[in-house]
Length: 322
Image 1 (cartoon, helix red, strand yellow):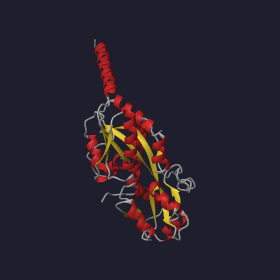
Image 2: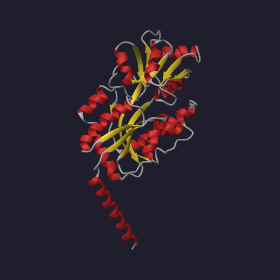
Image 3: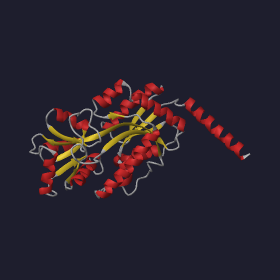
């Protein structure tokens, strides 16, 4: 009897899931981006939303809900109804950095959210102004060792990708640098080119135009492979810094209890979208990103690995949120 009841319950669950999939979506989908407009995640969200609207035949509308390094918008989705109509499009920070950087966050990225797909990955590039006397990475290391704690670098804030790359550089080169956090990439670059900073790890997206314009000198990128928009710039690992890897993802999430059939449908839409020529042109060719479009399970494995990696880096570098 128990087996019969279990099979009946399974059948009912399966039928309910099929029914959900057949009726979804039938109204606009809200895609929350937990940052202000204009950044890489926001641009990605708008390009992806437009293409997913075409694929799903319903409007996908981006809503910017910034604050707390992405935490406010992320928490809103974590607590939203798990019906597939409120999604999160976010970069790595709220998912794999904030939970290990802050003493407490109001959500659990593993328990409260379901990964749909990693949309893309982006990395950073180590740059100095072309007016600098520094001609190589080794020059930075040599000067840092002869003047401990004197050389400075900028980032977009404590716990940001540029900051983590700078700390990993210090650890892998056995040096010390002064970290100067800024409120964005632009003011950090202004001070870098003005001579107030020694170097910075800036996103490939924002640094490439300045590199091409011969205003910045690029030494290496922070990820495990070269950036498509900077093919002649080696990786930090190729430059001699073993196992150096600081990359950021942008991915799509749903509330944790969202039906698997909906997750699969949304995943299929993302995978189709990132193969579209318009999306490739907007986000990869022009944007300096690498498009992905993986499965929920693959994305979940990346999140698990990066939570451990960034926790170890933050502890080892003794990074504290001020």
